[in-house]
Image (cartoon, rainbow, N blue to C red):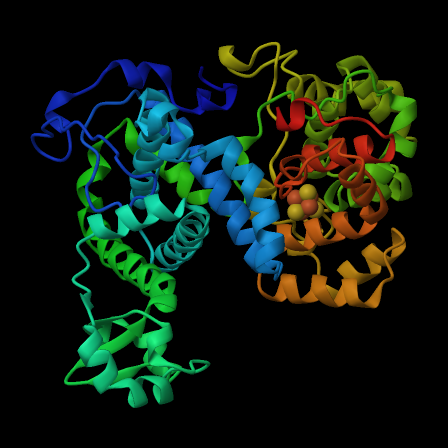
Length: 501
Ligand code: SF4
């Protein structure tokens, strides 16, 4: 089913497909059988899928890649990364092994999973091939994903997959092994006897990492690689192929510009790497049964992310907020479930120095507009506009002097950010240092997640230990309303519900 946020693609445009503009001339249909769980993505997909599948599959993969990238940014160990990624992968991009199917036969469910994996990879190739930076990030995250899956694969199926790649690895015979035993042992760190390993020969250019580490014996242009280094070789090969393919895709991109259907989707996807706003649907920030009224905003503000907390503090200090601050904050309040009447009451009570007439004529209309009570296009009537995601706040309309909207991690000076964090009770030196480093590297939402994890440390530990939340319920926050909802539920011992449903 289409998600609400897909409405950004004008539905009328979907219906009017100009078949002359079809890309990739003569896409002959080719049935793919997907005999292996793993994929080197050498063969592009050519079967037809719907536009909804095109977008949804890409969004699901993006979610996985964003989590992988977040783990690496936060320096999580391989074990922590594995614990974090496994449930996310299961939820968004599961790949079952052949042995899990009855009789070990690739059935329709396995094919569907593998098709989604295959297609989503190629869709994101298109979305992320435009700039060198995006290509680099995509290749890095995809390589980590491949490595993770490779290590988890059933050993028999992994062997069959490797054989299917025709990698041109030449096994070293027993005679050659004995002849070179001494050199093999001296050139391979940690090895006592050449007989303890099986070896194969490859062109030395294929193992730059082993050569750099001086961990391989070379003779006549061939590197003698022990079996245990197989993983790093396969992964290096995967990366090299993908890098090359991304270069080629980037050259083909201009031809895609004319496609009215795909270009807006691809542009949207490429903007959201790392903070995939597409995973947030309107209405999911609401906490069912929570008392959200004008009078409860003050106590609830302890659960707000720094962007909204800063707006709330400024509002309380000045009894006023400028236009973009009001807009950002009203949308957020709507997103947590504050009704229109309560929102008007909240602003009325907050703007202390204004008469009713002034308030009604200057401010009330805008609040009603946010809720879709007046104005706006027909699509938005009655619903208004969705609350801003981190991506939108981070990338659009930076505040100028005197304005308080935006994201403090991005738009405040380091000193002002530190002072703001300290005023909310965050004093830990290591945490503040981590935040500073994140901000220097422009990883603003990572800094925000770091603060969230620190301020909710005890609650996160509790819900993990009692099993009421799983790792997927604690994925990286990329939306202020998710921040609020998760904080509120953790502090009130609530269960994650719609947020991760
Ligand atoms: Fe708000 Fe997102 Fe910035 Fe956090 S990262 S302060 S939630 S905009």
